Image (tube, rainbow, N blue to C red; front, top):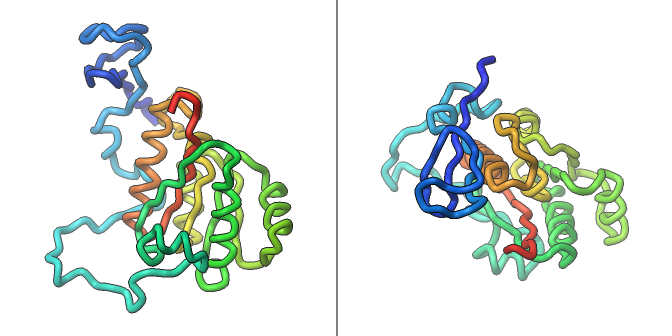
Length: 219
């Protein structure tokens, strides 16, 4: 397979160049050049594994609504924040400092939803044993919730496309990487491109997606 040609885009002014440099030649800012994929490469056939979207324009009255527009999570406060529950194809970012309970909240949510619909919890930071121990500590049911330990977004999407979960958690987006970029997981380019692929998957398949994002000391 031909290697994708990369661009380096300045996060300050948006200028692009073919080679990385410590300083942007346009605005003069330092350490702002971020690895990026040209738009043409993003649109090439088969870029998102397992997804073939039927893209067309619909009028408002043509949009089919489910009998139950929202699926309640079983956690009252979370449902209130979500406007009454989960909507198909929605993408929700759960952000905050490490250790405040994001994974615990989503483990409880997914365990409650797994009794009613197929769910997939993708863990990139913790092992499957750590997630299982948390669920047992919280007294949650051990059946129904599917777990996946993976960090490559292409593999995650391919597996999810086969399993077809209605709700999926990515914990956390900073650990996910795409093979089309050479930078390390957690880099701005990796987070942006991985998130873009996951959002595209959610919209095209109607999967409700939770993305966990850690707020670091740099914000």
